[in-house]
Length: 363
Image (cartoon, rainbow, N blue to C red):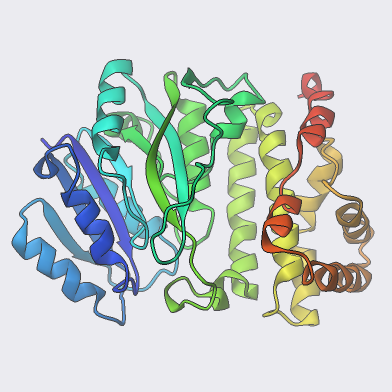
């Protein structure tokens, strides 16, 4: 049995794939103790050739081809779980890379803590691979600790949706029949939160175990033509509903309220900033997602900014055309704001979470 099975969904990643695979080979843990399952989602570039090259060179590298393109990584990741032989499961995107001690750190902590899964710190990198100066989670503020579903603040802030900075006990995943949603974005957030609600032993460690490459939107392999299209919003709507229903079925709406605050703000600005949907499509998207924005009132989670609240108010009144007009005004203003400021706007601040906490006991 391998110590770790690492699954890599791949679609048109020839520019970056070697960097990821070499970062696995260079691990301080013996890389032959790591099973690498590379799952191709019908790439049209030379990604498949690179996969086959590594699979022929190393017997612990497995090359798999899906029968149809799925656009989203859920199907590929489920295939990795299905084929895995490792004691633990890890995941990586084909355009990112690992610090050289990532697998050793994750494996050692899983063994020491007998954990269901572990979530760790990670760091961004420029498209050319230059690693940023500071990691995502402040090293002074967030030290190692055990997460709890009853901790609606500290645990929430380090439990990001991505599976790429995490390691899971494979038997735990199989015992609870946890899987990725397929065909929709947000599939990893569903997997992570489902795991969290079923777990007893989850830990955060402040070690940096993953490098997430920030790529230009024009890059063809993570095409903005999908991620901001009407198709995207239709799919994310299904994903968000599945995540909400899962929290509701687990009687964990108290924790979900914090996740909802972040998702509501993120999704609304993604909708506002998109330049690839017509006014008619915008109206239909808002109609389809009205249930989601209704949760703002139902869960007592206000919008992060006044402009958002005005738009949500119009949505709830069914005045979709006017909501679209408000979105255009906000989009024009945001076009003059630096990227980092825009990103900060897309996240609720500490004061917002304080407001949310006042109503915790009602859920």
